[in-house]
Image 1: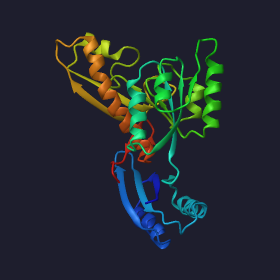
Image 2: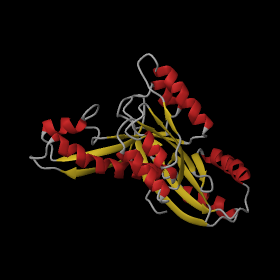
Image 3: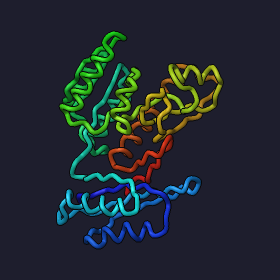
Amino acid sequence: MSAIVFLIQCKDQKGLVAGITSFFAERQFNILHCQQYTDTEVGQYFMRIKLEDDGSFNHQQLEVEFSEFADSIDLNWSVRYSEQPYRVALLVTRASHCPYDLLLRELEGELKCDIPLIIGNHRDLEDMARQFDKPFYHLPITAETKQAQEAEIKRLLADFNIDLIVMARYMQILSEEFVNEFSGRIINIHHGFLPAFQGAKPYHQAYERGVKIIGATAHYATAELDDGPIIAQDVQHVQHDNSPQDLVMMGKDIERIVLARAVKAHIEHRIIINGRRTIVFSEGA
């Protein structure tokens, strides 16, 4: 079944649910699911509404009419059509566990997206790309070539009509210009439970601090390192006799799950960014 998903954000006000659902009912849309949340601390309202798309209503006309309606009550909104799957680019370095997991989930249909290319600053994962029949672009980077390398990444993203960029353990810091241009469209996996243990070697930092849990965090990339809006996190208990290498191995499993969870939420149009926070609507709707 084809579907249309609207994400809506606005100042909380009376009659929102009635007004929005009436708009779609008047146009004979079948509402498949509707989720809402009101942040009473700041007076903000958030909604995700999923409609059956039987092809009887022109998409362009729908957007024009909804835009007029939204302007009348000051709604911010976005829409996604299930017949247009997200096109996702993977940025990789040497670690294979996260990109391999995403590619396998795409292959098995768990992630309903297209991954048309992989970009790496080393050649280590070229064989992995070949295994999944994906083109691999090797774009090495140095301090002197960073600007040119990012320009080439942008060219590839445009050529492949990419909607979402996933830093699947891409161990490079993207420039402020790059992350601002693709704001809200870059997901990074950090191998630590943010905001603790930012930066390099978080598992070693966790070992030195003697923590009893380790975790991983998927977040949107921003100009501030490891500081973007958090999408998904998970943790695992550890023991005093676990070595730093043990923590790294345990962490890989958490990273796979957390990154896949975040990518899935994004491509299912379930996330609204609200400042430094995210509203992530529930899965399966």
